[in-house]
Image 1 (tube, rainbow, N blue to C red):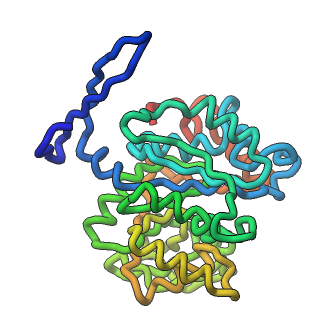
Image 2 (cartoon, rainbow, N blue to C red):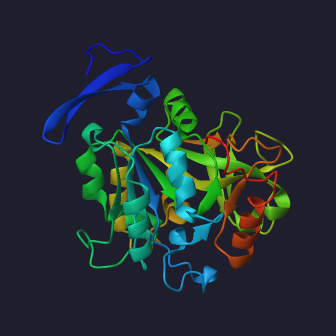
Length: 318
């Protein structure tokens, strides 16, 4: 690697054997890539998906087909690749064979010699005798695998949401604000709060409170006073903050071991928790983010990609 590389880029050389011969390859690494190389993605794909039955009878929810030839998980993985996030663990649990095969055959596009990977992690019961008991517990049970990569930051993602997002923008704000944790939020109408975790945010973008799926709320977003900021289930942690928080939560017998219910609400008072207001790379008039956890939501999201001028565009470069 070139020494003294600036943010504008560096050049990395590696050699591969082809037919017994060595071949030198050059790859220009941008400043963004250098920063994202310090970030590890952890994609939660272990949900049973009972509300999507019978589509989940034989496969995990993230492995259900979407938009014709794709799988639901492809949307989030595409976001990762387009954001230069190329170290990703996928945490699986239920009926994972179809998902494992899809990742092996469809996502072997990253460069191993550069330390890149998209890797499946099944439950290993290394630190617990239980299966994953919640989103935070799933990450906690893979704490050794995360630590072995020595990332500066960990980006927690969900494998069953449909949206387009550049995670580099979130990382930039995270660094600029000096945050310990950054939560991606999206503006929603106050009438829809029963479907979302609502985030209370001050004028400086700092998270000061949470309401879990309230029927009504008096909270309003600092980004738009007529709207409410809702959590998207995308969390960026500094690793030196995430690890002790997970260890503490694992010892709490009353915890549901869930990021939205337990981890983040407890952190608001003691840590620098900030909101990142969703910037939609779908580039339509209305923001697009869908949780396809029910048959109705799944059907509607598929219809959104089916028209000549689709609401959610799968045909652009991103």
